[in-house]
Image 1 (cartoon, rainbow, N blue to C red):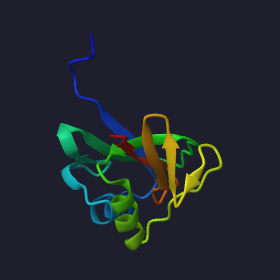
Image 2 (cartoon, helix red, strand yellow; image 1 turned 180 degrees about the horizontal axis):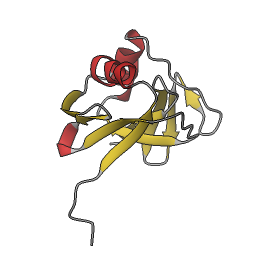
Image 3 (tube, one colour; image 1 turned 90 degrees about the horizontal axis):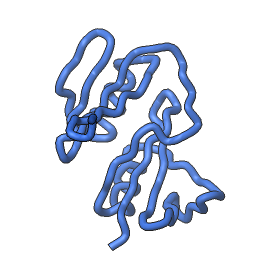
Image 4 (tube, rainbow, N blue to C red; image 1 turned 135 degrees about the horizontal axis):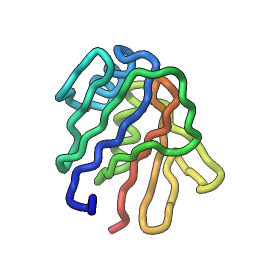
Length: 123
């Protein structure tokens, strides 16, 4: 029933201005709609990501991930902008990147501690 409709990842943040700077300036997303309570960003392939102001909400899992074509370049580029990537034992990360079945992944946190991922399909 819902398969034909767009999905927008929605992430809670405590400081909308700080989060906007991270998602726009650090991650390179373009804001498309802004209200006093939320900001929506355009992403690749017609997908979108929305951040909304709310009290602290700590999820201990990935809330959204970006499908990338060169994970090493993305990790290096974001590290150059001050982004810290997470290291895990399971799945084991090496230089911040893990083999996860048919893909490779890396994880980072936004200023509120929300976990975001990068995923590259193996070719």
